[in-house]
Amino acid sequence: MNASDLALFWAGVIAVSILVYVILDGFDLGVGVLFGTTRDETRRRQMMDSIAPFWDGNETWLVVIGAGLFAAFPEVYAVFLGAFYLPVLLLLIGLIFRGVAFEFRLRSERMRPVWDLGFSLGSTVVAFVQGAAVGAMMRGMPVVDGQYAGGPLLWLAPFPVLTGIGLVFGYALLGAGWLVLKSEGELRDWAYRRIPWLATGVLTLLCVAFAVTFDFSVLAQSNLQERPWGLVFPALAALALLAVVLGARDKRDGVPFAMSVLFFVAAFLSLGVMFWPYMIPYALTVADAASPEASLAFLSYGALVVLPVIAAYTIGVYWVFRGKTGKGYG
Image (cartoon, rainbow, N blue to C red; front, side):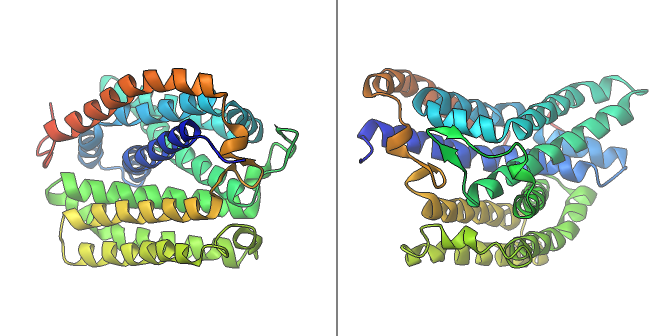
C-alpha cells in the first residue's frame, strides 16, 4: 500500500522537525556537555550567555515532533514509547534539570554546584538517550500486531550504547563549534583546542559501534544495499568531519560549526536512506502507521498556521542575536 500525499506531508514535517531539533538543540546540549568539563566560573558564564536567547526556543521543535507523531502516526507513537519508556523518562528529567539549573544557578551561590551538575549531567543524559534510541532503531524493532514486542532494555545493547556515547561527542562537537562562532578571547581558544579531539572521538565511536560489536546486521537489513547511491551521504559526513578539523586548524570561526551541521545533515540523510519507507524499522511504514485521511486533513489546517509561526520565531531570534556575544546579551 502506498502512502497518501497527506501522510507523506506529515512524514516530511516530522523528518524536518527532527533534523532542525537535532541541530538547534544539539548545539546547546553540546554546550551543556562541555560546561561540565571546566570549573572556571567566567568560562561557564560565557557558555551560558552564548545559548541564553536560544535554548528554550530550540526545544519547541521537540514538542512539534511529539505532537506530530501522536496525531498523525499514533501507532508509531505507541510503539516508540513502549520501546523507549525509560529513555524518554530520562530525557524529560534531563530537560527539566537543565531548565531549572539555567534559571537558578545565578540566583543561588550556595546551591550553584548542584545546579551546575544538573545542567551538565542533564545535557549529557539527554544526548546519550537520544543516541541510544537511534542505535536501537537501527538494529530493528520487534513489533507484533502493531505493538512493541521487545524488552524494556533493548536500548542498552552494546550498539545503542556506543551510538549514545557517539551522539554525546557529536553534540559536544556542535557545541564547541557554536562557542567558536559566538565567543571571543579565551573561551574561543578553549573551544578550538577541543574540536579536533571531539571530531576524532565521533569518528572513532562510529567505527567501533559497527566493528567491535560485529553488528553488521544493522547495515545488512537496511535499504543501503538496494540504494548504493546512498553511500554518498556517509562519505559526505566523513568529509565534513575532516573539514571541521581543518577549519579549526586555520582558525576560521564559521567553518567548524557549519561543517558540524553538514555532518549531522549527512548522517540524517544516511538514516533516511536506510529506513525509508519505514518509520519504525523494519516493521511500520508511513502508509501502515498514518492516521485516517480526514484526521490528517484536519491536522494540516492547523499546521499551515502553527508551523510558519514557529519557523518565523526561530529565524527571528537567530537574526536578532546574530554575531558574537561579546560580554553577553544582557
